[in-house]
Image (tube, rainbow, N blue to C red; front, side):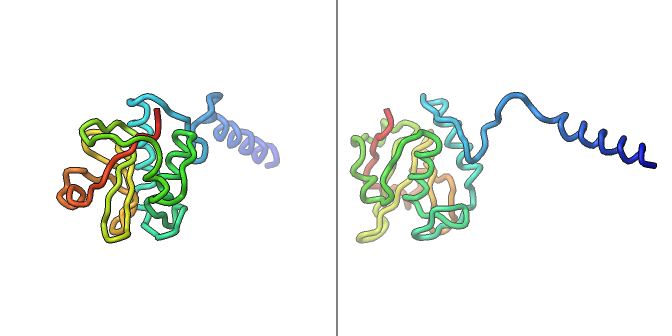
Length: 160
């Protein structure tokens, strides 16, 4: 009986370690720093998958709830190893202005959704941007959507 228990323990240990890899895996807490347009696009889509549906929470900065500027701040920090300020207003002063027709992956896109309310997202590609929406949480949206077209202010290039 004792030999059977030892055998089961050894077999279980072998099964558990068989899936281990010698290659380190990227995780949500240790993503690679990416550069180049194709790598940025892929990283931004991965970020979308990780955060999709996280609810919007004004002042929030976690997966329990996050606002648009905190989402930009966390994304820039984890994906691009680049520190940006916490507020949309401060983020709007970063980098250089970019015409909408010249947007590149990683550019920040800004919207005025009320008198003083501002919104920020990160351009991905083909007219899509990633952001924390007040109504649907973290999601991809289309710049050509009439709502976003009406409220668009500007874009800023922060990354080289």
